[in-house]
Image 1 (cartoon, rainbow, N blue to C red):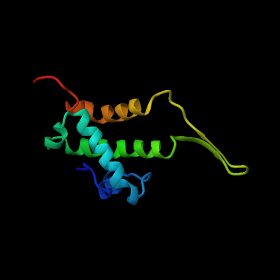
Image 2: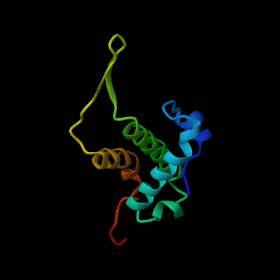
Image 3: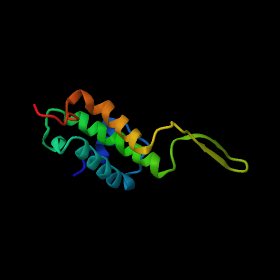
Length: 114
């Protein structure tokens, strides 16, 4: 189950990076990652629905960056050239950083006993 649809991505989140044809696949990947991080608790949580949708969109964009080779630092047209940024972080680290930024205040990342 994807937490965000393309309409939410375009209108509420304000996303422009992902084409509609690719969004379903990327949001499913992002949603599966959220489920993994939250031990399935995000699916049952109604109190933090907006943060979960936002995390889904942000993660989908991170998956899109990965699919396209990374974040572009510069491009040249004559004798075409493209340079990608290197943050020094692995893809998994970037995913977690994005998810934690949005979801940490919700308590959903806590894996202990309440």
